[in-house]
Amino acid sequence: MQNINAQCRRPYRDRVALVAEILEMACDGVRKTNIMYRAGMSSLMLNRYLGLMMNAKLLDIVLLNNKEVLKATDRGMEFLHHCQEIKELLETEDDSRRKLHRKIQLVRLSS
Image (tube, rainbow, N blue to C red; front, side):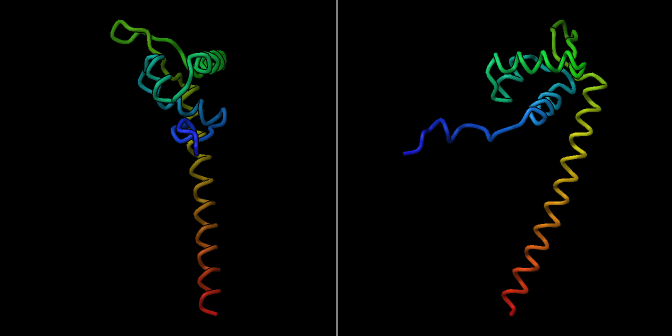
């Protein structure tokens, strides 16, 4: 019998993917608890990532409607932009491989 918690878990995300996910949420400013719940992270894990990101000057704390929120810095937005470019590049490469694989399958079927 499969563990029910294993079914609900998110797929493995590497450090870059988690940082990019947090930056996407923080484009317009977001509360720390919102990030924690939306990203499915523990508070300990989130605090580690936020510390890392603030030290790297990817995130900053700003006041928005009299509340402290986390907001992506210009450097954070640039990081996010580069991550999206890489993702698009890899998706294009994957699409090319799939098309080639389909062509090979069609040739095999027609033989």
